[in-house]
Image (cartoon, rainbow, N blue to C red; front, side, top):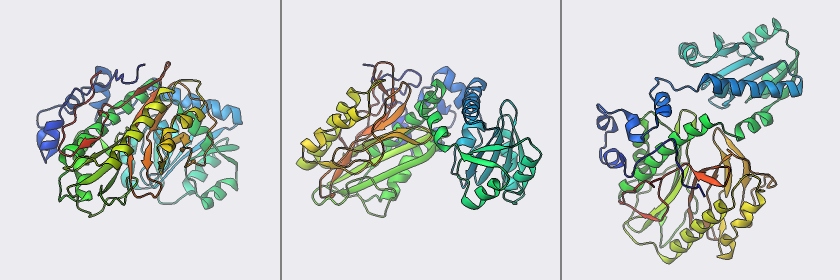
Length: 434
């Protein structure tokens, strides 16, 4: 099976990790060095990576717009409103390449340039540079008024909305037009990735791998969890990456009190005999990897953590073994039954779709169902995070192991190169070769 294939982004064994981890000032380590050299990008990705602001090809944006036009035709919609508010709502970026910042209201119509209203005047100059095939207009801090004035001049009858248009603003729009939500349809468009999108995910995954290597290598007794987060981010911020998440859990193996990585770091100091585990996503523009690993601090794992890790690792391998197009997601849950067989359960989701959002399938284990539908068929180029978070029934101890994968024609492929294993602090990780 092609499970470890990594065709377009090759991060060589140990490539750059010693330099990046040992130098506290990443900017100095990059003097005179192209950041792409650290990631060993293939020529097609290097041309994207080296842009001042990365952008997909014209063909990729045309594909996305046509997919949206097809949705509009099926719903007899003449206009789509793409909404970003407070950084929430990524359809704006998917169609125009503008991240959205505080607020962006974009009017999309088939086969013509879009019109975007940007709330903050100082955000307009960059929006004009980044927004592709889009006229950018200052919204004037006037909320919906400029949009409504614009729509009144268009032949607008039925509007589909994608993104967080809050109640009062929805009612303003609805007072003049027939309005329906297209959020579900948009989500479906994002679940199957194009080859270009997968390539960008590979870059995000490579940056995430660097972050995990830095965490394992650099963690020492006396450091706070806040400092661990700083350790992680230094590896990819200087490369042009962004932090998406780094959830960190740290606890004594002898008296554990953390079963799942926590969303916010604390001032807790790392101690000898601790177990540390992390869910880590660094992003390249809007495309992030996700890698989950754990390690002990200046001590061998005790019997409990050995059992927890081995169960999580076995569950990961069992789940990924059955992944292929046409498989019903119920089989993935069934494949994880070693968790319950070994006397454990889970806290976090077992599997979830990923890449531009948190998508179906969202699966829980047998003993901790997710509450989402589990009846779904896998398709080629779906991307998912397989991440068994195996915990004790009393929720005092746990581990998490996994990574972002894609569904291929014959099985699955990991987009990450962090080696599999239960690590020890100070260990220098050697990236998996292809």
